[in-house]
Image (tube, rainbow, N blue to C red; front, side):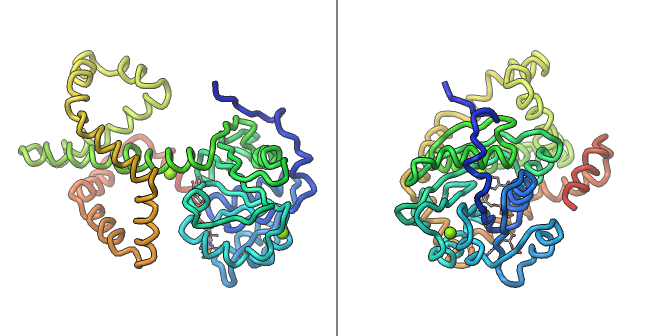
Length: 340
Ligand code: NDP
Ligand code: MG
Ligand code: MG
């Protein structure tokens, strides 16, 4: 089965003594940079002139240079600016990337879809924590780990995997466990998952359920609770113990009804739509569409975002969330603290 790498599998001499340029100081960038630094690795943060992130990086005790300067000096360049700006940032740093250096990513989009074409002689790797950056940082500070993925796209030195594993160790991922994948698998499964199930599928399911109830005369408040609010309770159970724990926890009526009706609602036609969605990811159609959308200034994206914001369920939800005490005050406060 899948091999999982832990601390003992990493050889830290593969990263200790090297200089890592971390480009970007956002969600992932601040976490990688600080964890590497605290692990004793030499870190330079690469930020554009007048970057709004400069003050944070400097006050965290890190050296900041422009991306081209940081990359030229570094042995490992960790590209942690947003995916849509990575090709332009790469153009600015390309001259400083020499044979034997490493280009390191946390997501494979630009490499897999050839938006960045690395030189020969350069190692190209991925260490992708499976968490937002603030947790990557917090877990590290608490002597805990964050599970991660590791992949090698180009191994020019013969040591790309070992170095990536050492990088994963230095940011705390091997404390929790790291599994190996490929750039292709990481990108395609990630895009498919967020489109079909996580972000796209689930919001569409919620909206259809809500609209069905409201259109048939049920109150907006009841429809909101039933189709959106309670989803968290169901997902928490599945997260903890799989679908089995969820089925065990709900009533027999809910279990029977769900088992009978679920596959009628999300039927074979939905499965066919999923196959098409996956095909568009695999053959690059979706990537081309998204790149063109960005080049055009995001006209459809802006429109879709607005429509989603203006959906009735968002309106009723905002009112209800303000009216009810959910008993999650501490959690919400902790989350708010986290953001600061
Ligand atoms: P962010 O959006 O948090 O990155 C913001 C940082 O990038 C800021 O420091 C910003 O500085 C800088 N930046 C933005 N535009 C530019 C530019 N044009 N030139 C130079 N710097 C710029 O990125 P994420 O951390 O979310 O994502 C980084 C990578 O990690 C991506 O590949 C993403 O797919 C991957 N990833 C993200 C995860 C997450 O949870 N967010 C999880 C796993 C992987 P400025 O103030 O100058 O704008
Ligand atoms: Mg260099
Ligand atoms: Mg994703």
